Image 1 (cartoon, chains in turn blue, orange):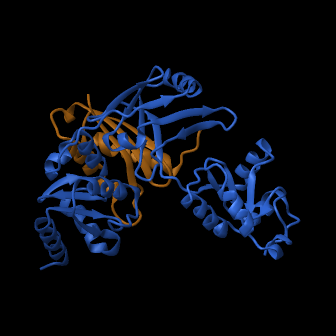
Image 2 (image 1 turned 90 degrees about the vertical axis):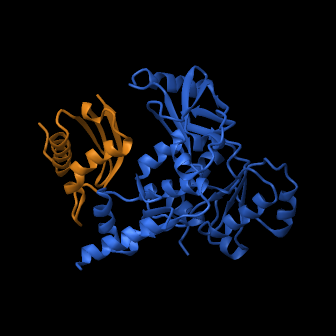
Image 3 (image 1 turned 180 degrees about the horizontal axis):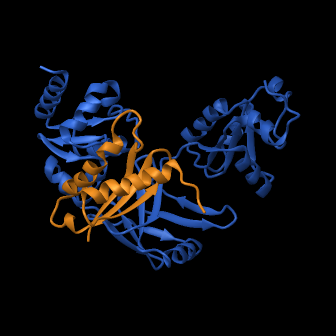
Length: 306
Length: 84
């Protein structure tokens, strides 16, 4: 028996002995490519348990599965021995509800999300729509709250939402995560700005440039430096105050929507301090990534790295 | 006057491969980063076929460009198959 035949039989056995199996890059918990991650995210929602094979861990399986399925890309999904396809097809079958049927999962009715589009955002989008082949906007919100907004045609299963004279198409998976969100456009910050009540509150990571812009806009922002005095003696961001235990007590009494900024040497300790404030219910917590080292590089070369 | 680049050659290779395998197909190729490409293929030959079969027709044509360690095409980020 040749090696190719052996691999083919091994794959055939895997496909036939598992109701749902995915040949992917990485594992269910740690997908190592965006296409594989998409498939895992969808299957996680629809089925309790399924098998995955990490092709990065086995070069023979990696080339073998391509020949077995006559399909040149990874991931590849099989259900009850039937080849379903790659991430494009899985996404499309999920959107239309056909994947639910194949997997025996119930198609739950999904309501179109409520979207608010500010006048500024609507104006920019209407101008852009005028020169598009498909003037409808596809909006997606991933499980990790990465946003996608592009012009494109309607796909099966899309929910249609009219807002501010624009037509938005939202796939079923994104609908719940998009519900109640506001899309704004800020000329000064030259970009779309999203406020989404479904986003879990986390410490927002900002660059020193973003910190500087915030300080220029409001010189009185609360910027807490979590380093000790001896470290602060090496250099500080003007306007920062040392976060002493007494100051922590005081800050905790502030209204929970007060914008707070945290910094340290490189951004690790200040992030932990920020998480404490998130845990205490604060909603607008910022951590300066790179800390004083990044600030020194960008704005104050007199501060020596340490 | 432009310079012919490797990317142009790969793009041309994709168009030639797909239109050779699916006669009369209109092929639009967009080059992303690295060996990533997006394709839009319009053909009457897609009529009545499932999405899997439509994509398979295109992927079969692309297979030689996608196999081996030095494959010029690493991934197809988007593949749109449209019935003409």
